[in-house]
Length: 257
Image (cartoon, rainbow, N blue to C red; front, side):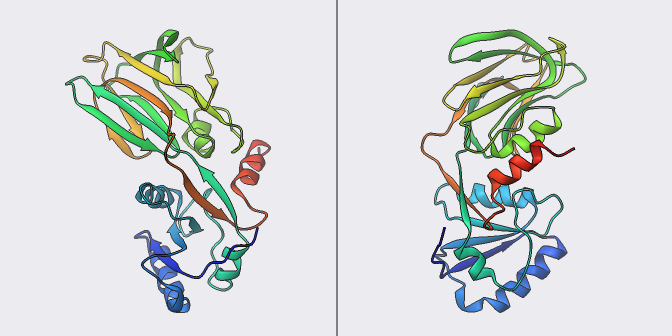
């Protein structure tokens, strides 16, 4: 794919590596910097990439990340030279976030978007008890666990993978429903759901077995119920070096040891 990239904006996390990269890149590409960029260059790790994408949800501009953090799964390799050429030959990944809506024990409503996953987590020493419904049908009357999460394909290699959830190809139109340290049913490993499914979690004994809901890094405490579905109106765009797309990275992850 050939693009025509003329204007850039640079954003960097606060860590020293990212700040040093920001200085070098803004000096080299000063003539391309614009308040209305064709592409945003994000310098940091995966956490900073999620922050950058969340900031673009209302006005999505393609984001090209360069790894100046730790893991960098969503990032490209860092280099100062040849950036415009890399952007012009880059490949686009379309990301559709999850919409998390629900209500707390006190009756407060909430509505958040998640790019990687929505996770429900116990707040105390007691395990959470959660009823799971898919498209208004109860599929599990009671999950006893540390929690449960729903991951997008993009997020399937993050928290979902560490909880032994399935890695999902980017174009699979599937969501991962994964328990976190399940006690009962002990051998339940989760499920794969269609991207159009609506998922509801009702917290059993919600005032004593308190649970928080987290959309990426946005936490709501003491939730009573949570409903999750893929957003129909929001799309975000990531750019990757040719031959190193997000789909290829996810495929490689499935065969790594």
